[in-house]
Image 1 (tube, rainbow, N blue to C red):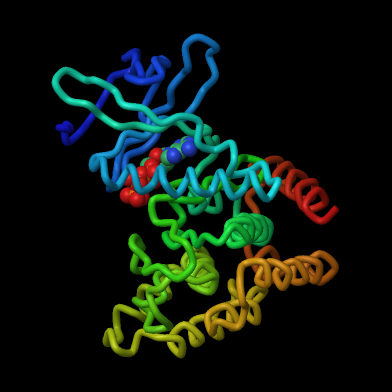
Image 2 (tube, protein in one colour):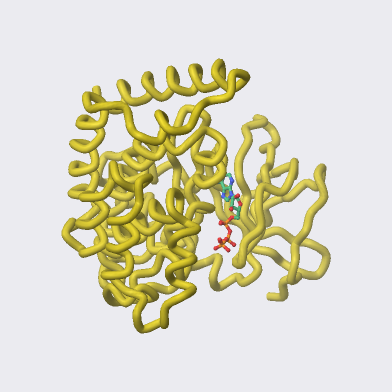
Length: 315
Ligand SMILES: Nc1ncnc2c1ncn2[C@@H]1O[C@H](COP(=O)(O)OP(=O)(O)OP(=O)(O)O)[C@@H](O)[C@H]1O
């Protein structure tokens, strides 16, 4: 089976599945990664919108499909409804002489975590972080580790709902991590092995948080030091010195040092932290940065949506 290197399809192209004969009309490219290209498609007939992924390498795509299938089965058995409905269909597409494998999944509306926080402000980190930990906890309960946690793989809706995308790196507990991004990788930071366990994801989450709020400082401090000095003490220094990380300090110190057994443990600890913030004093950053007048209405709306979302979450 041959495969074009770059299956770039123009809007309007109809992708017909070879085996199941379902038709999907390409609307636009949602994104391109190292492993494949993801399109927004409309199913015909019926018209529902989905995300359709074509892989550059059929074997990599198949292993991703295997993970999603196994997750769906486990989730179904556990009575859940999150992962069991994510994967919709797997088929092949005959494009000229070549056959391209693809799969269809739920279309997740949202923007990558780092862009969401940049646009809506760091105050959202508290809520979005809680929801992300909840997602990871659901995955851990099914025996899987996400492994390649990075801002691009976390999509956030305008109400702060969180979805993980790209399960290409997900592994059952105990396997070696096959896909990772250095900045969020426990091995890169000399903070533990590259074997998939629950703490691996919690560590990546902690690094994600440091990156979101203190990215420049992290780059500066690691740029100056030798690779062998990259490690837990260096990260603890960044956490200790940072004003922006102050509300998360004790949580982060524990996460970095592998104190939390899994994402559920980390989630409950974070939840307590959210409660504390709710009743505590206003944080320093909102006092020290004056808000321009024209931003106040959108800020107020943003705060209102966040308050509503926090209440929903803590019900
Ligand atoms: N279900 C989805 N709903 C909406 N957008 C999606 C969905 N899946 C993927 N995307 C978009 O497509 C992009 C590429 O998808 P994906 O991350 O699966 O590809 P990849 O080749 O595995 O990427 P990477 O190089 O990060 O491993 C994502 O960054 C995202 O913008």
